[in-house]
Length: 491
Ligand code: NAD
Image (tube, rainbow, N blue to C red):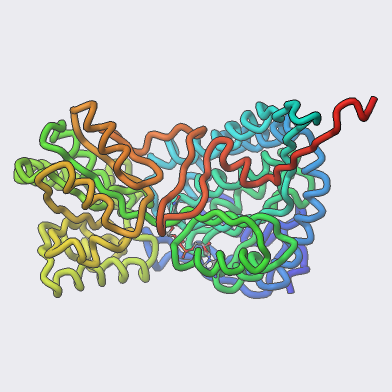
C-alpha cells in the first residue's frame, strides 16, 4: 500500500530531495524502495526511492481524475500563468537541478547548467504561449454553423527514459498540461531524483491538487498498473522500442491514443564537397554524453574519395576529448549510466570484433574502475552487422563509405530506425534532395541538435509513433469535436 502520507528526504551535497511520490499535491510513501547510485562512483548510494506499486498507481490515477476536473476547466491563460510560475522556479534552481542530475545520470554539469535544464523552463513557457494562441476553427457550410472545439482528454500517463530526464520529461508534460490534461509522470528508475525536485515546486506554482503527479518505481512493476488503467485517457512514452511494444498493447486494450518517441540509429552523411573539418568535429561530438543520445548520428557514411582525410580529422578530434568526472568543466566524455548498460555496450563491441568487424579506435573500458567506455569507431564487415543495425546507446560509432549520392541515401535508409539524420554538404540542391530522401523525423544539414519547439518531432519505423512539438503535441492531448448548429434555427 502507498496510502501513508510522508515526505522522506535525503541530503545530497547539501540539496534536500524527497524520495517519495507526489500524488494529489502531497508526498506519499511506499513500503518498499529501490536504490539509486551515482554513475560517477558506483559505490556512492544517493538514495533509496519509493518503489511504487499497484496501490500507488491507483492513488495517482484517482488524484489525477480529481485534478482533471479543476485543471481542465481553467482557461488556457490561467493554466499558462501556473506553468510560467513553475518555469520561474526551475530557472531559480538551475544549479540545484543540474547538480542532482549530474550525480544521478552523469551528464556533463556545464552542459546541464547552460543548455539542458534551462530548456525545461522554456518547455513550460513555450506551451503556455502555444495553448493561449489557439484559435477555434469556425465556418459556415451546408446550412450549418461549424466550430472545431479542442477538449482536454483526461488524465495522461507520461513515462520517460533515464537520459536527460528533467528536460525530456518537462518536454512531454508541458503540452499535456497546457492542453488541460492532468498528468501522472513516471520517471525512469535509473535517474529519478531531479524530477523529485520538480515536485517540490508544483504546489507553490499554483497547480490544483492532482493536476500534476509524479510517481516513482520500476518500469515493469509500476508501468503496467498505470498504462493498463481504463481511466487513463492518453499515454505518452519515450524510451526503447521493446518497452513501447508493451505499452502499445496496454493502450490498444483500452483504445487510448498513444505516442512513442523511441530509439535512433541516425546516419551522419559526409559528401566530398562538405566542410570536412566541421563534419569530423561534429562526428567526434557524437561521443558526448557517452553516446546516450537518441538523436545521435552514430552511423558515419563518408564519400570514398575523402575517407582517409575525414578519418584522420575524426581521430584527431576524438584524441582531444577528455574522459573524466562530469562535474569537472574540462571533461567532455561522461561515464555510462549504469553497470548493466556498460555491459551491453561492451558486449556489442566484443561481438563485433569476434564477427570480423574492424575496431578502428577504442574498443575497451577506459579504465578498470568506473563506468567509462572509450570512444570507439568500428568499420563493419557489412551493412548487416549488428553494430550498424542496432541502437547501442553508447560511445560507439561505425564508419562506412559510399561512392555516389544514390548509394548514400540507400545506406542512410537501411535500418529499421528513422529518428534523425545529419548531412554535410556545401551543395544547396544536394542538401534539399538528400534531406528530403532520408527517411527520418528530423534531418539536419551542416548542423546538429538545433531545435525549434514549434516544429514536429518524432520518429519513423521503430523510432516511434506520433509527433511531439508545437501544436502537434497539443492535438494529441485533446479530443477534437465538431459542433454543427443549423443556421437560423437558434436566436
Ligand atoms: P526503457 O524503454 O527501458 O524505459 C523507459 C521508461 O519505461 C522507464 O521509465 C521505465 O521504467 C519504463 N518502463 C519499462 N518497462 C515498462 C512497462 N512494461 N510498462 C510501462 N513502463 C515501463 O528505455 P530507457 O533505457 O530508459 O531509455 C533509453 C531509450 O530511450 C533508448 O532507446 C533511447 O534512444 C530512447 N530515447 C528516445 C528519445 C526520443 O525522443 N526519441 C529520447 C530519449 C531516449
